[in-house]
Image 1 (cartoon, rainbow, N blue to C red):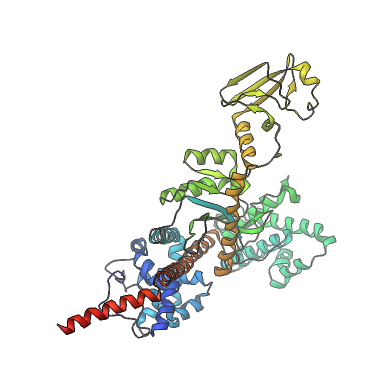
Image 2: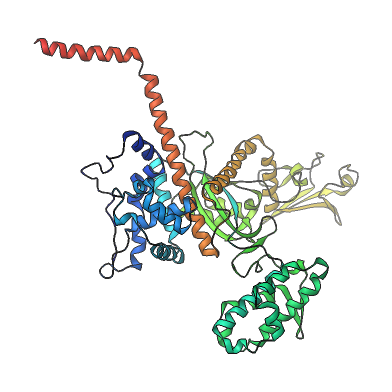
Length: 554
């Protein structure tokens, strides 16, 4: 049965009056104060309603408390046991969740309740609902300017060890034999005894980690052959084929081996794709040649050019994907997501991979200007040196020679130059003009023209002044990891990694909002102390005293 507290109602009495004035101020100025006053009443508890009955069953834990505890667990990178203990004993958590009586059952949560509610949120992707709700609230409360944002990615490692190719084979076979032994003992008895001896024990699997480099090629042939035998032996057993461990065997075989006429040979390293299995314990993890095994989170945040302590920079978008995914595919989904939240920026700063010509064109259609270095090629493109007209046609070459004729058809452009002049030109080796039957021709497209203009703009002081603020996102990534431990997680699987990354980003927004509120309060007090001089105080006191003296006289 659904149980939710009314945290919007203002109590008649101060329930936290038992705290001393100084202690109360410390807690109120921390993240706990802003969570209780601004976020707790607005938590999207209704998103959990469809998964509970509103009339039958035992009452749930207050759903506000449930969501709050799950956020705090990721905020402080706690284990489940540590989370339950903090809820029972930490006064900051009590204050944030408005649990003013610590002896109350509201301050206790069992491990099973924690697990069940977390799995509910993970499986239904409600973490994104929580993130969007809290982000929107903070944007409105602090008046965050979302017209300028910046985008980058951070690498995340799940709870798995790094395996070589032999390790991937041996662990996959070992896992399959373990499942076969437990669930299908009859079929397990039909497996070759040599394969069982080689893989069906922890010590046997550990032997593969001590293979000499000189013997690795021979060992790889052996494990490939063993894996192929198991796949073919059970390929007609429908029940075993449905098991996760058998599917992993087939995946490893297809990704790591070539099979020709029932002869299996390991692929060369260069033939193996980056989305191949990295560890059987986490089938969702892939490989990035730049950052290694695991996942990556795309992060977009607001920024201000005149950064003040009273300005709140807030994360507006988080998305987790396998490590092999290219950043070039992340920009448009990020813009579409923030557009749904009504936080679409006017300017986005990003790395080179995000700023492809296709991405900049699509972003411009959405009214967003992408400030990014141009991908690939030389910064001194020959086309940049030509003098262009407003409609994109060439007026003259770098040496000042005008074309004999120009043409434009759809998105294709061309210019024809006198061949005698071009043959005598000292820049002919670097010029894009190519000799033809009658003239020397320069051909280019709209895309070439756009890239040329972007390269020119990239060298301008205006671009450098704008783009220098992109580096601030690196500080966010560092804070994201230092405060929440996002780069090394205790869990496995894409859904669980996404949940942790999103909830940790939510917590980071709350931490930042608390710091900004402190800075704004100090700024207000500073202005009062500056304007309220001692002479002004004496003058007001005298007028106040004279007023009451006259009242007493009459």
